Length: 331
Ligand SMILES: [Zn+2]
Image: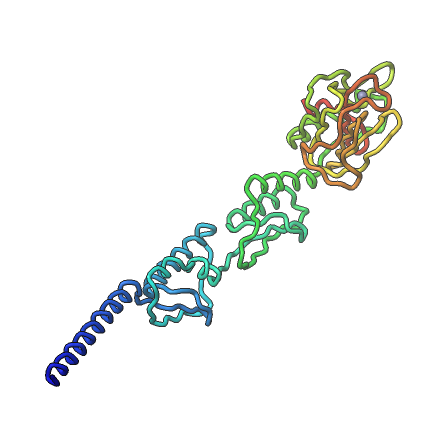
């Protein structure tokens, strides 16, 4: 009886041990299948994530360097400190779930070099290519020698807003327009058409090359500049619909916006070089004195206020205060 019992106990123990080994193997296999060796990565003491190896870290880092170089190929990319790697095991799924790109991107340092074009110590343009800055500085120096033009080099961690070529060209043109002296024969006699026409003809070419635009939608001249009813008509009348937009002829500074007798509601814009434009008989004024306007900006709506018999814009160009044939500047 005792022998039989012992045999039973032995069988039970062996069975239990075998079962235990089996379960342990299963657990180990499961764990090995789902857990992978990885390197726990830190930069500057900050946990970045798990990488399968330091080589994988390098790959991700290089991807990010390329990402920054796509913005500016001369960018300096670096880490403040070398990364430290700790061997560890993690669930395989975690490797793909984590956001190492984002974490590492936050820890990457960048240094961009930007070149600012300063005109009389005022920042006018910003480039990340030195050649671009040099080009515009050379252009400015040759066109308007009286201005103090410099390049300021700066190192920044973010690139910020850069000046596009289109924008830079427009700024360049504007600076030249505003500062280039225009030779002209000024006239003071109010009634003399021949003198004013001479003055306008002399300056018209220069102004035309400065690119003023037609100030209205309609191109119908209802009354030209010149003698009319025994007096001189000081502007060009362009008929149109009431409420039509009136556009700024060029960039400039609004010097007056309000009521002015027979002109009705009028906007006066100073464009530099002694050139200003007047927009009269407006229904509505959309700008105020002291405001800077851009070429093509809607500054008022067409109307028939003041001494006017129908909806039209009375467009006047004045050079050093003297009205000239404004049609020559928009034709
Ligand atoms: Zn008129």
